[in-house]
Image (cartoon, rainbow over all chains, first blue to last red; front, side, top):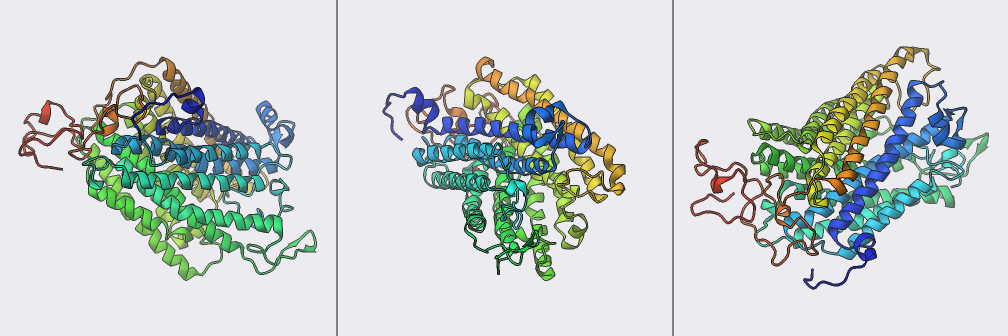
Length: 169
Length: 424
């Protein structure tokens, strides 16, 4: 809001920035990164649907413990579909789209110096970043990622023993 | 799974904080002369999106928290009478349908949280690149608000086969089909804006037109799925997958791409490469239809979604070849996104330097300097005198051969009205 220029360090300018233009870029790049993960997942499970009995080196490379001889296990197929849906709907098309363009355009198109609260705007991005990291980590836990579909209907999702992806982690 | 729930809970907190910020900013920080009825449609879309988010996301948070309780602390909100591996579990009295209600009370508005910003971006880009005012500005605002309201009372159409009262199903069918009205208003307004426009077919415009196309294609199958009687046949088949991918997936992604191509000069001060943009657009739209068009038919043939393999069902053997075709389109389409990624990152550093207003647009963001400054405008904030869509305005509005007002086919919002000019 103010006209006085305080000195900006690398950290306040590019990382913990409160400027809406920088935050919108952060949302965009994080959203694109999550998008790449989700699109690659969809390509993996499309491979499975087209050639269910064929062995692929790429499946072996990406799915590690969740494949046998280059053919993905049924559980990981469900997990891929689940996480693809979750990431695309929430992380790319909600946060990536609204986060980028609401942040960029609201102040610029209504003629404001910045968002009403630059600080909360920064908090919003970093919570999004944290949730993205947790979602990515969940791909690597031993029990496997969530696999009850992106809608996570109970009882499948509510009972840890119901399906492997619903396990202890 | 617990990590999924934790991640989503944090995500919801993030989007609530963001949404409240957007609402407050739009209501309170508009510059002098920027009445609500002079806002660009992008802002209207973001504003209403934020409101739907605030209304519906907390419900998902509560649904997720109750699910955490059921998973980890032995409560029975969603569970009852469960037998597993010969064992009777202790859960009593809960209902999984409760979760479905809570989830879809967010889940359906979420579709519009995804779609409305894309539609807002499209409104702005189509108007700018048709060099014409958007057709039916007030009708657009009205339909954004109608969609937002209706989106909160249609969640039951995801649950026609959940065992809920069939009478309730017909109520949800009615409210669902009502959404077709404001959606059609928007689709027709886009087409009418394009009609006889002076089209500038740059990548952003192509993606916007692509959005209108997929929005209509996907919307039409929504009429089938929204009907509680017809839905039973195709519930949980690839028909559903095709429908929602086209209407919200591909449409929203196209809106996002359109926005990136259009506002990249504002974000990074450089232009994106047009040729790569054209390649990206044409491969993407052909592959998008190549993937989802055949899915309608395998869905009608009964192929269920979320199956790992269909080789155990001889009745689906005929569909195996179509699945191969879909996969080939999916792989090509997925790999073609490299055009975009490469274009994005290379243009960020090597792109042609952008001018202040590369698309000859009316809105305020194009009056800011190319190099970002803290506070957006050096010196005073701009003052607004007109709406955002004075494109190709003539001196004599009844005579298409008269000169352009101000000698150019666009008039910035900051330009004061001339004597005798009718305010818009």
